[in-house]
Image 1 (spheres, rainbow, N blue to C red):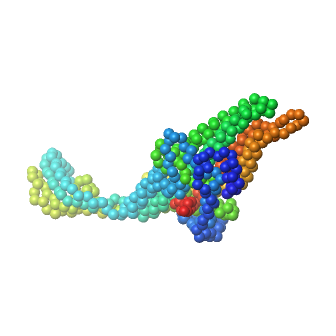
Image 2 (cartoon, rainbow, N blue to C red):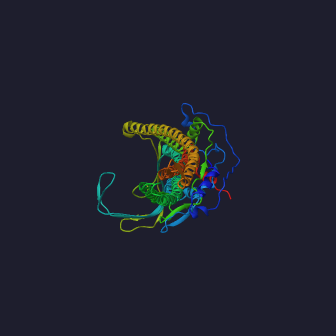
Length: 522
């Protein structure tokens, strides 16, 4: 919503601080890309989640509009002891794609899942072993006929071997499950990106709200000081002493509001700095005006369309779909385990089995004779019925329970996504309504204060008594109303922007598109 130019002229007429008056003029700016809006997805049927895939669909809304207005352009209002860190919304969105630790942690989890998938794909490849073996025996030994003999002997071997002990069942199904785990981690990385972008946006607009309210609060301190001065100058018969006291109390309240809002700016800035991992000693100073509004989602879309789009686009749903598929593969793996054999390929030239199987071997009683080539391998194909089949049944029950739990978790996330879309859409609607009401209220409050300040110097005669056209307490009330209107306006602007980003995230749009979506044109 763009504020009317009337507000600018009224603020300039109310002794606006010099820093405010010297700011450059901003005008409303609107740009667009080629808007594309595919047909809204059909409402999911009885099992909508099963069809949902992790995709990055075309935007369902025209290009976002960034609207600014010159009426309340906030100056640099930082305390002298803190250094300012200039930043823009597109820059914050760019940093949100890489700087937050949550994203880096999720990226490492993707790498780990991909590595596990790579390892599962090569389960059928045997392991190679190379080395040296020396064996010596001294004392009694029993031969195959049962005789106990006192013999000493020793042997030496240098060589290598190929060994593999794995289940064919595992070699088939483990890569299928690991692939789904990797897909789930990739989808969760996108979800973490979206969450980080939302956190950055909420913190950014918290800073913007505090800056906007602070700019007005500084102006209202000047108005309160002017009101105190005028009240003191009024004649005793025109304004009793209590009016001057009331004006001083209001001045103190306005000064306290400045301190509170300056503190809130620093607190909101600290949160944004924490998320983006910037210099903790700095206070961010957004370069856009504080009443910047951002529109990311087409307002004409119905709630049913938004929910359907969220159910087919949210990466959290795609991630848990992949988890469900992984549990299905593991369930099939356990069901087929007793039927599919395991393959054992072991090198047995040395003890223990599974070490060296080919190389140069030599031995003797008191010395090692000439080394000669030797190779020994053992290949087995084995079927296993664990614990007479009871162990296999327990493992099948375990995997089945994991599958059902993953499926229930998927349904819970589906319900949460629908609720988040509905909640965000309600917040957007309410904030838009508040913004439309807050704008004329701001205009009226500015006009009321201006007229009340003018009326303090005007009198009229009632019989033989000279009275003020406007009493000081009425000017105080007008100033209070203006301060409240200022707070309401910037609260509505910030809530509207936050709600837009919440809805953008709720319907599953990728965070990576946000920097381009909100990039400010020259």
